[in-house]
Amino acid sequence: MRKVKFDASILLLVLIAILLVAGIIFVVFFLREDPFQDSIAEEKTINTLFVIEKDGKPLSSYVLLYYPATRRAAVFDIPGSLGLIIQQINRMDRIDAIYDPRRITPFKNEIESLLGIDISFSIVITLENFGKITDLIQGVEVFIPSALNLYQDGHILFPSGINRLDGDKAKVYISYELPEEIRELANVRRQRFFLGFLKALGEQNQFITDPQAARLFQSFIRTDMNQRTLMRLLDEFAGIDTDRTSIQSVSGEIRNITGQALIFPHMNGALIRDIVSQTLIILVQPPGSLIGNRVFTVEILNGTPQTGLAGRTAELLRSFGYNIISIGNADRNDHDRTLIIDRSGYREMAVSFGDIIRCSNIRFDSDAQVNPEIDFTIQRIENQSDFTLILGRDFNGRFVTD
Image (cartoon, rainbow, N blue to C red; front, side):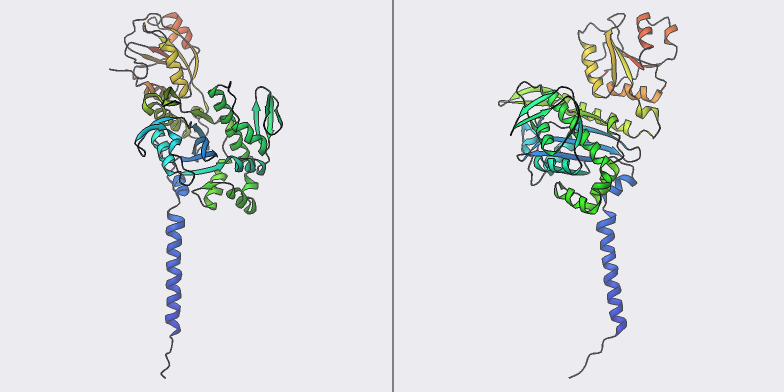
């Protein structure tokens, strides 16, 4: 029988080729396609969907917008009873009608379309596991305005003031429902707890990112992230100042459809997309910028015969994060053009304020009190606010029209 001789150099070349291919695969799948790193490199916001799930449906859904360069964040609360024309089922229904615990992509896609953003990651936590995570991070601190007694598997007392809730109490606190409780107050309660939860994650970040605790933490959630990306994300979240983080609900008009009360977003969702865009402008303001940390004040004056216009406009502008210090009537009710009087000293923010209602009629005035063309009442109010908005007949309740 003839013996086959192996050339050692050929074997070496084969090994080198195998290592080269393995290296290429690693680069392609682990480095090049890293959305977390891409967002940081391209200075994009990292948008994360959090779903707290109860009985296979969202109890609460929040989208966290985070900008790594400034470490600023904002949160949007997505009510499950949000009414939409859902393309995937070709009918009008509540947004959580398409929620499937086994595949949340359709639900996430509807939220992306609603807010006008891409959602980078998702984290789903069942109510039971939410309690376990709360215990893992040594409880969540939350402010409770009024003492609350609940009877559920025994007597549970939530005293007024600052409380650190363990896992069992946390589950009750975010899931209980009282017939007499106003829906908005229930939402605020859950929102307050979610911010406390984010804060606790940040405070316990060093512990959570320890390998053993990290594996336990990841076992309590369902996510589209690998462990490395999840830990990097939690590292970033540790720098969020939750005391300065705004949280807003997607609001709208309540209508009864097929026996259920649905919330239909204002202007078919155009308003919430505008609010998200305005929020992103604030998030990307450079570190140390006074604009990024400042809440601008507004005085609204109705210069039309339309009753209640100033009040409705105040609700609109509060949604964008402005502090409405007062509303009232202008010197007369026949103003043809809407006017913004800027006394903030931030010209670009005045323009941004005007963009919300598509008003370009802005007077940048540092000496309005000596202007004889403006009524004394308006002059006095200007000195108290960053912007004075005088509504004219060209304002339709949302935009200034030509």
